[in-house]
Image (cartoon, rainbow, N blue to C red; front, side, top):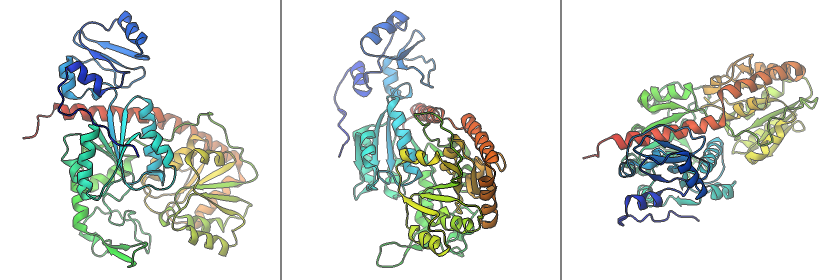
Amino acid sequence: MGSFPGVGVGESHSEDEKLQSRFPPLFLFTTGDIASSAGRDQFESAGVCNCVAIDDSSGFRAVPAGSLAIEPFSTGASSLAGIGMAAYAGMRILFVHERFGFFGGAEVNLHLVATELAARHHALGLLHGPGSGMGEGAWQNTFAERMEFGPQAGATVREALRRFTPDVVYVHKLSDPDALRALAEASVPVVRMVHDHDLYCLRSYKYHPLTRRICDRPASLHCIFPCGATLVRQRGGWLPVRWLSYGDKREEIRLNQRFARMVVAGQFMREELLRNGFAPERIEIHAPVPRPAEDGFVSSSFSERNLILFAGQIIRGKGVDVLIEALARVTVPFECMILGDGHHRAHCEALAQRLGLADRVKFMGYVPPDQVRTFYRECSVVAVSSVWPEPFGMVGIEAMRLGLPVVAFDAGGIRDWLVDGQNGFLVPWMDRGAFAQRIETLLRDKVLARRLGEQGRQEAGQRFDFHCYVGGLEELFQRVVRESASRPPAG
């Protein structure tokens, strides 16, 4: 397993040596009026390629062409070293996540963003939890420098910060209080991506486990009674349930409120954070966008196969059982492929068998993200059957970009991107009959299905561009680094 190398802490170097040791060879920094085209040619001939030189007679920087952070500055090398040069060039970004490897949408997003940031010449590290057993090799390739959480999570965080010396920390899913406290107390700015509801919901899915009724309350004493959310199911333990501390959840929220920024996918999740007391100026919307296909856009055949596709975890909140119950009401021939796995799979397979759909509903198991796209090419409609308040539903954005209509329940952040009658159909929550009717409408009318899919593709192209999404994160990281540098030292 890779580890974080030492960075010469405590050694004496000149300012130029410090800069050279801190940043990759692509980036050179000096002072003086050397940002002429001739000067740039000299640097490019020395191996600093694909650069843009910016000079205001006080400083020079060479950054990758296409960087979104090109702006004049007035400072010398010593000052630049003092504020963390990553604000103007390749940053050192430490990712933090509770897993290692693919598992769900959070892991797919983390890996996509990290891969793109590495391609943009940022140095990446990863502090992570146990492996998922899925796609770990790809993560090893992306994160050469990594460290696994030890039994003392707070101490592990401090050691990772010491070894990797990041300019910014990018937290994904993390709930350990000692780890969060160590990050909140660190001198490095911390940005948190809020993928789902586990930050402020004891059950993590924001609906009642029996009725599935969606909760619209903040974390409060209501979670204890009448909700009873402090008592949750325990899988694999010697008791079927376990107790969760409401006090610990409140502390988790307070620690996250100290982070420099909270990133959410859409307006729905922003409102959830506001409801739970997060400062509006610290919340930013950056909708997670899938990477475009390398082979470009290939339209679905919309064939008479009438293929319906579901892609995601097979857990109760994703509503695969509700989807199957809806499909039992569809009267035209169809085939449905369920791409994914999870603890609710056995129940859903038994349900399909009981409803006489075993020959038409196929459970494909876990499919690597780079292979999912092949299934879309014969698809006529994508079903997003989530009955929990979906934080965003990135699978829907993928469907839109591929020109496919979506049928989904109106739950959570789905309406952040799905407009009824424009790029698919938004169905009242848990209305199986309406869901079946909308599916059947698209299977019977392929002209309509193509039109809605094409409108979705155009909308996705305008609103959800992968490179702009990552560029927006870059710009955010640079801002929090500058803000951190401009604050006076604590104490």
